[in-house]
Image 1 (cartoon, rainbow over the protein chains, first blue to last red):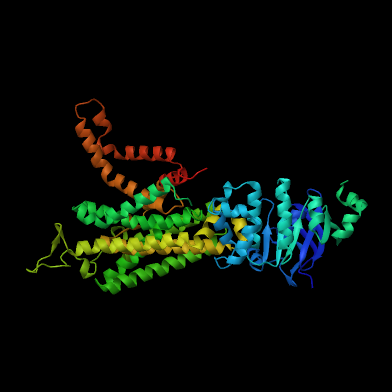
Image 2 (cartoon, rainbow over the protein chains, first blue to last red):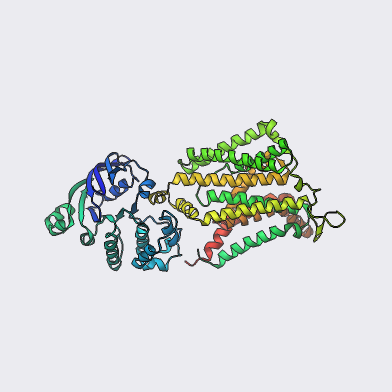
Length: 233
Length: 355
């Protein structure tokens, strides 16, 4: 059974029909990458999974259970973490408070926290600082750290490399590779080299439709497919 | 939060205020000062509990005096009907608390989903109904005249807490150890305990959740917090604190009427105090209450002194005529809001933080 299974999901935002037919299965473990041009519906797909936009048709199954009508907070409590494009952190709260909020019990697992702070040492330095004072890269680290502060079954990450310096991106890739050993990541990404180096399976969305699914390895080797689907060289 | 100068200044001031309040009956030995001190104690809890709503969660409610009034009327009616006893105080406070919680839960669940402005209007409507009911159900509430009653015997002015060898009331530093002093310390410790419970609440993880919700509801939901549930919870908690301190105030005043516990003038005082002090800090509430209460009680006297001292000058004594105190109070508000847009505590605590 797949961890996450979308079947003919459609989503409307106001009068705009954004997603027409989104179907793909994410199996357990590793990184599943969602590719597509700007405005293709990648972010809307993630938000629909979290029911931040309610899908109008089709089903969203998580471990076989339809979650398409569940409350966003309940989906999060089931073990689905969301790292939105704008990072979704609370600027007025400290780094520590941001992380505490993402724990179910209000306290940290010390070993897990220590490993996370090794992955993202900047968070340790700014532990008691307000999150709004962090740089863009540090905010992204905080947002990812928040998603993995407790074991999750699925982490949805929306364009984590956007606007980050190459050195930070490389660190981020290593962190994701390590995280993906113990959990499943559904990654939306425009940075093709980044996506290629991490992904195991992938899907391409165009104009609200899933136009291709398959293994990342096959996609990486097929330049022609990349050209037709993404319009890239 | 950083331990910074502004932070320390605010917390030090608040600590000093509590210390002065603790010794107030000894420091200022006149009836009016004790009345002012007790009113400050009651309003500290009332305004801090309102800060839980407006400052920590971003909920604007106009029904806060209603909960205050429910606690006060519950205790007043129980004391009137059952006679002066502790069981009447406790039963009345519990009934007031129960009714407050039921109304808060109903209003919260039914209407905290709507936009802030509609919620504010709904609370305004509910509070108006409560005010009308208090004045119309005169058999129960005494109508516009309110209710007078006797407090439990230990709080009667003639009660002797401590006696000397002749059986007379003992004086410590010239202060009679009678029922009045017992009543003051009843108000003091009730207020201190309730304030500490609220402080504990806002530094707990729930406090962080509330701040997160205030900042961004959708983000709070995305990490697993049901916003409506938390808002309803905090609305009920604030109502409970207001109701309990209302009961305490009823015992202190020995009188409960619409003007002392229910009127919209009190609601406006609460709003002004929380804005002047600084929202979302708890400490700010204390500062706002003290400044505003002192101004309300003593600005007139102060202006009288200034007018007398300047009676030889032209115009000046006219300007400082004690009858013009409201004009000056209003001017003070405008200046405060202009120079301290985030309130006194908000401004000072933010200033100390390194950028």
